[in-house]
Image (tube, rainbow, N blue to C red; front, top):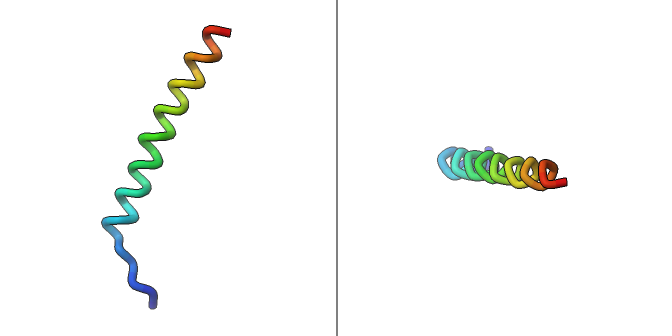
Length: 34
C-alpha cells in the first residue's frame, strides 16, 4: 500500500476549499458590478 500522509491531504483539501470560497466571492463581486 502506498504511504498516505493524511494530514497533508487534509491541509491540501482545506486549502482548496478556502481558495474556492475566495474565488466565488470574487466572481460574485464581478457579476454584481456587471
